[in-house]
Length: 135
Image (tube, one colour):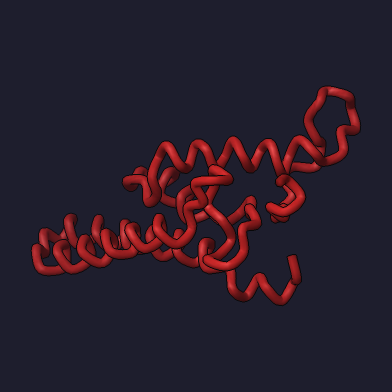
């Protein structure tokens, strides 16, 4: 992956946006502002559908980097982590997210150097791994 391509990390941005919309919905619900609830809910549903359609790669079993790059990225789902920690509803399909994390572990953790011999790398996840290397 080229370093300049990070600027086009649409998945990272999409999931952060979904997390922000979940937070806005929760604020509107707390204020009991029905108009805002409807507005944010509609925007979130539209954004969720777009995110799933653009980034889910059925063949590879994970959310890909952007619409044109099938690489997998470790921190692309940081927006999902935000909603998990704050107790907001999931921003992406739960089954697909599980598959994404399994693929991330298989592709961006296991192949890295294992210093202590336990079969798992000791450096954490590589931030990005090219899909081409796994075909």
